Image 1 (cartoon, rainbow, N blue to C red):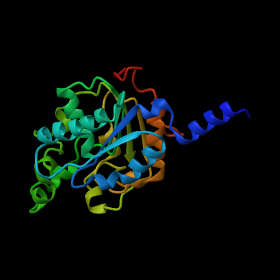
Image 2 (image 1 turned 120 degrees about the horizontal axis):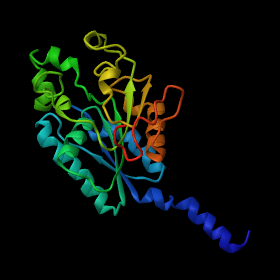
Image 3 (image 1 turned 180 degrees about the horizontal axis):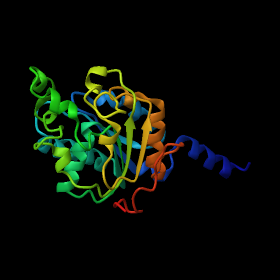
Image 4 (image 1 turned 180 degrees about the vertical axis):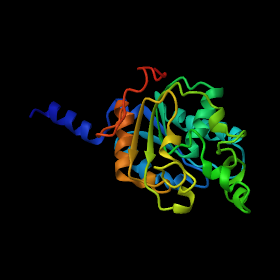
Length: 249
């Protein structure tokens, strides 16, 4: 191998591909969690060569209407500071609702792809049942009261998605008290059916619980696959549910 070829090979080994380096992924955690809950996904995406903005926000202190612009725009600002050409999002639970709400108010011109983990896109009946239980509001804050299926449901007030979205839903539970109020299968807080949303491009069920889905190796592999290709892999993957530009068929 001549010296020029050797130099090129060395550069490829030490530097990620330009296409990935130009992509930034914003991570949005769920209700009553922190950015630390997405650390494993953060590390995996960084190894793949992506820039990552793992956003921490106080999910229990405000409504979805207030949390959405604050969290999303912090992520966009961090990606802009890294000179990212495209921005994608990976969200867990309520983080997906924040993004959906934001995108109904604002456009993100360089938005590429979105993966939502266990999003309560149709609301969660757990909220309906437990919202009046003493301590629920203290534990979950005002945003936690907006994730049900009643008249004040934010998810149900949102329209179909119009961006390239892949949804990963968990079908394992260790919280059998909450699961008795949910349509089966469920992940202990959100049913598989409730995670679906009109306009999504791909959907898959995985053997994971709501609380630990973000640390599941299969989930992380599926996240990376969708960000790379716009589709999931495996026998139960549902792909091609939208048009090429992310709009519902």
